[in-house]
Length: 355
Ligand SMILES: Nc1ncnc2c1ncn2[C@@H]1O[C@H](COP(=O)(O)OP(=O)(O)O)[C@@H](O)[C@H]1O
Ligand SMILES: [Mg+2]
Picture 1 (cartoon, rainbow, N blue to C red):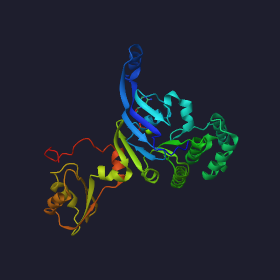
Picture 2 (cartoon, rainbow, N blue to C red):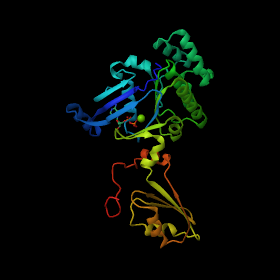
Picture 3 (cartoon, helix red, strand yellow):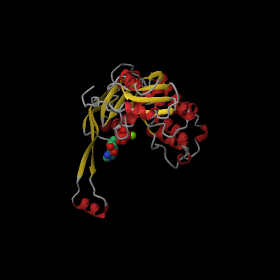
Picture 4 (cartoon, rainbow, N blue to C red):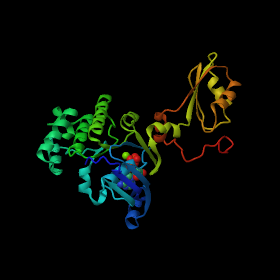
């Protein structure tokens, strides 16, 4: 499929997945009670997601643990059936056409392998060629390309269970691309990879993207992966999309955390507590003292201005120099993963009034 039209290749509308979870009390008694009278709660892992990805896009799909990233990927592959909403990938509804859909997609789950555990890698690859019914000529070509680019030659006779994580990931990547799918999902692909393998892995994805117009959807905790591979970022939290736009615009939208770097006129070991005391009127401020002549104040620029902070500090501390550091995309993403990105809540000042 090399259709260069701008019709979305992946489309989701109101996509929702609820899981039923047993509510079991601990211990034998709880287990028995559950047998007699099972009770369940439902939780919504993916909550009304609308998504359009056009061919050749590379999209980062990020959010804290449990946000619903892997569930979304499983819905897109057809492994899971949605509770509500619609999905099409290359014009097919994944869970209704799992096999046909499998021909259009490649998937790498960082946490598990698609290789046969006890078979030499070469045999796993051959089986995949059979499963996808690839014509011999096409198979040999892709095979030699992938083996060369990912440097798999030394691994072909090794059973998957004997591979290191990085080796296994390279083989999995090849396995996901044998059938030349137009869409590739990567779910935490670089977990545990060392720097050199990571670089090679990214380079490979970029090449496939550039040369084959591969559409990539990547979930990763690794900002390097995201910055090197993706132009667009979709952030999700609690199963809902909270941001969908250019990676470059993320800091503009969420970059409210700022840092004030202060240099003191003379060493003062008590400066950090004095600064803390001077700023008690403001919420969500942290004071660090990297040395006895410097202070770093981290604050929410929606709630208070740097000017205000400096005025409050100047009465207590002799300042020689001031530098303001704006937020980086990295700190926005870190805040998101650590659950500190409260985009919904309006910031409030110390009196509890909206800023
Ligand atoms: N098969 C399942 N049964 C019950 N709950 C599940 C199942 N799969 C995922 N969940 C729950 O759905 C939520 C989202 O999970 P997941 O999509 O794996 O998150 P992420 O990949 O963003 O870390 C989590 O709270 C998780 O515990
Ligand atoms: Mg996950």
